[in-house]
Image 1 (tube, one colour):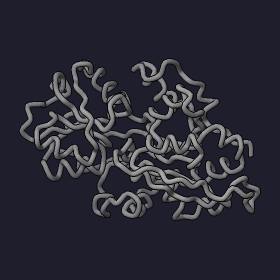
Image 2 (spheres, one colour):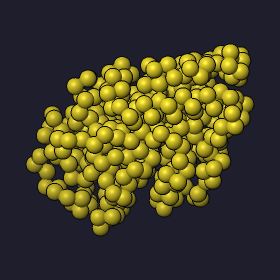
Image 3 (cartoon, rainbow, N blue to C red):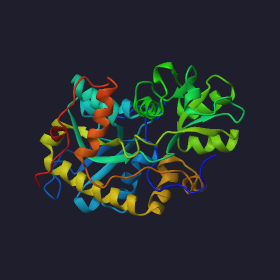
Image 4 (cartoon, rainbow, N blue to C red):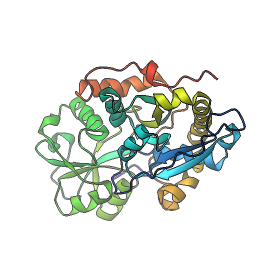
Length: 326
């Protein structure tokens, strides 16, 4: 069972499956009152805690203080918003998972610009669960088993494989099965999979309803602190709207600091946009909210992806991280 005391950090923000798509609409394009190229920007956002700082910032009017109006377009997967970002139908994606977007950057689907970091892994923010009567007692017992993940060959299997290797487990002997997060508990209960790699709030819910137990701490070493998602735009948008991008970045960094400094601020916004009940929000494990854009930290996800073959070569993060000239 989960530890009764939870470390303050940030909820696993991964890709959440669903059927909603991003609506069009790029906001006002006229010059803002503070000399911004755009005074209204459209942000595609997921209903997960890794994007909580965006909503904290909206509540505290940090964007307004920068002369910005933010239109939020809810999405269920950051990958759904990728085409809209590339087309310019949305300006920023909140909670964009780095694996998908770094791959898109390498393939030339879009030229990525990271405005702010969103979330980094903390212990027990996403775990591997099994049923109470499962014969699986340890990570080694996962060999030859079916493990549910939200999307194969992405952040879940990437980080879990690193953990398994560190514990002398052969990841190639694990069969990853794609199951949407909301359906993982049912899949485990019905025996469709042997284990699930699941994030909050589904993690706590499955443990409560099924009495499921943890066999692998999905945020443990050697991946503790690895950045998993951020606030991204395209290099084209940043080049055409440098003052707007800089204003958004300043507001987001302040919002990240607010979220990192006071868990209650995160708990207060979760029910509204993430539809997480207040009592659940008060106990879930949250990830770290990085308060700067750190290329050394981001290099960790790049190194993991390169080692795993998810990137052919390491990109120059100095050209991907947005540098404000304002």
